Length: 186
Image (cartoon, rainbow, N blue to C red):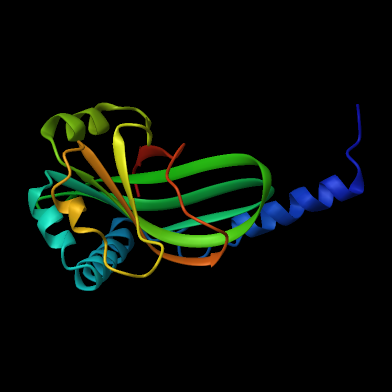
């Protein structure tokens, strides 16, 4: 059996420590009530900071809200968070979001995101899937400047519109590409 060099082991241990230090992402929370409280606070922040997203909410048939996604990596990286799917303002399901990556990276960041399902077909496909992965079917709207999210988000024709907001930490950009959503029981 081949032993890993100490440097490789230490880098992996450091990555693991960053990933487990994912405070505030819902890990170990006390169930649905905690997730719902975080979702409420996240939506209040989103709608007050970006008022034109209220129109987007009103057109959507469902919204998946991930209050905090924690992303960390040093060579090997990962991201995790938990949230709720809301239909008509009521949580109907709970989901985890997870992704992994390998390559040159040094990052530790947190962000919030919401997936607005604009059609019944997109929402139904998401809910039927045993593990839905964010990809080409979603239109991504990034807010990297702390300014207002483009008004075009309220008139987009995409079946799923993904908003990323509230970024904090060390790392450039936030993306949902490759993120897998899995239904959970909190």
